[in-house]
Image (tube, rainbow, N blue to C red; front, side):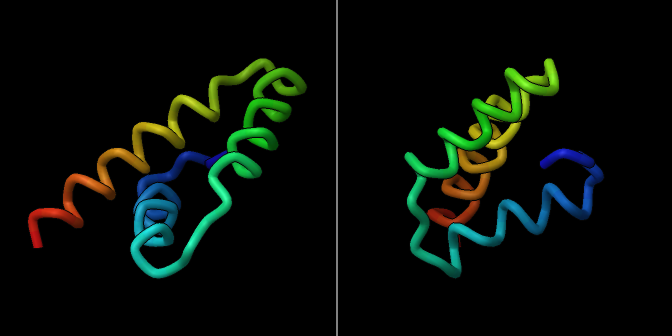
Length: 59
C-alpha cells in the first residue's frame, strides 16, 4: 500500500480472497501510517478491498 505500484495493489486485492483478515487491526495500523506519513493509505486500502470483494462475487 505504501508504494502503490499497480502490482502491489493487485497483490493487496488478492489477499482477502485467500486469507481471513483482522480488518480492524489492519485499519488501525493504516490510519496510524496515514497520520505519521501525511498520506491517505487507509482510503486506498478500502478502495482495493471493495474492488476485490466486487470482483470476487462475479466469479
